[in-house]
Length: 256
Image (tube, rainbow, N blue to C red; front, top):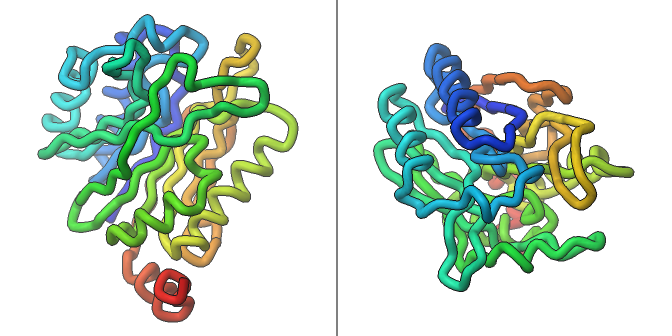
């Protein structure tokens, strides 16, 4: 399975970000990628209040991304914001391809002095999707700190986990990012595709942006690919038999 990591630096304008997404999809499709993964908040940087841009899941922004994916013949996973029933919004991953699916972020960042739950409603269910014959589990940013989510996704048959993030910069945050992504791969004996917003020093107090360093970690914890801070695309071919071999040699999922 060929996967493209699209590490972009989202702006505060959803239409501008559609142009970034279109360029990345075009580049990925030219390589024969099956899947293109964008960060959390690909729709709009957290430097703008996401409640100002949230749409319905079948609204114009998502419809445009679905059209781009369909025309390019790839599957796209991208972070957006959708309206919730209680006046808040959902932090949503859009899966766009021949079929359409979604994941609403379950674990909200009520930590380090922040309260994401004041404006964002939590999702209520796990999401795993079938892409190019492989089952892929979905997670967003803060979810990566919760091992049980990845174990449960593995229990649903996922051998590849996608984590889309807007990982706020700060003391030890790069070390934590690398460690957590590797740990979740080893916990679940799965590949983890972790795509972050490109790094930036532009920001306001309490607003997550990104540190870059999107990465791919194999099912035994080996870092297979890591980007730097700047925007860019990276292509990787995954051999799912490596996950099967890891699970046979280290049957932690069965023994737990």
